[in-house]
Figure 1 (cartoon, one colour):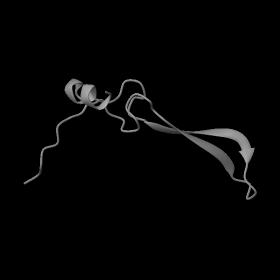
Figure 2 (tube, rainbow, N blue to C red):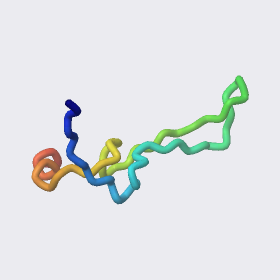
Figure 3 (cartoon, rainbow, N blue to C red):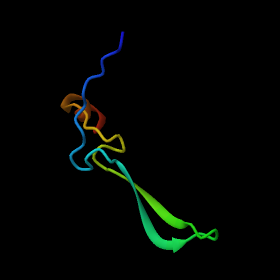
Figure 4 (cartoon, one colour):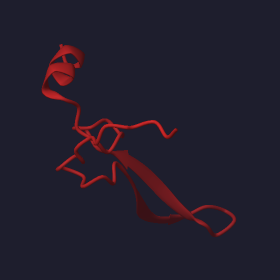
Length: 60
């Protein structure tokens, strides 16, 4: 029997894309690009919003 997973709302700040890579324009010695990974500050890289009761407990 399949387990039921509750729907969690998608973070409205990052639209569910919590980690992005940004190129700096520089290149490594093997000619690949230098990238910076940036994580969404609101959802802390999960892509989902926490319920109001849970988020209040974790942010204190």
